[in-house]
Image 1 (tube, rainbow, N blue to C red):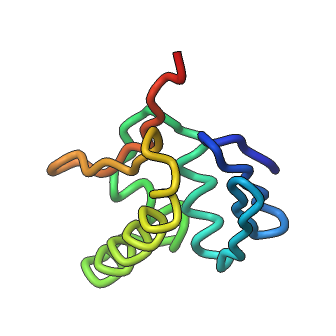
Image 2 (cartoon, rainbow, N blue to C red):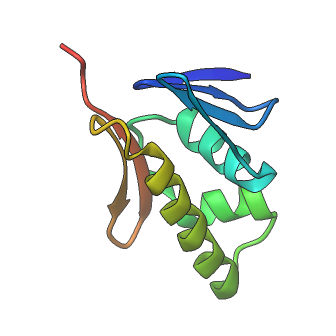
Length: 101
């Protein structure tokens, strides 16, 4: 499946993220996480829901792994300042895209 996220063309099947001709290959887990967030763009997603969907379980150590993957995705997405993964304190995350208008 493909998603348009700001300047990015995200192709989940081919594990690629492209912006302005610059392409980045993603790991399967990075792509799965980005897809999960992209399908829920501008919605708050609970940490527990992400862990269940992507890792199949929810425990403290996987939560630390989730933080590492979120950090990587933030680094990749920083090319577009209108697109960011926000921390929602005590709840989870939101992939937020500011209106282009």
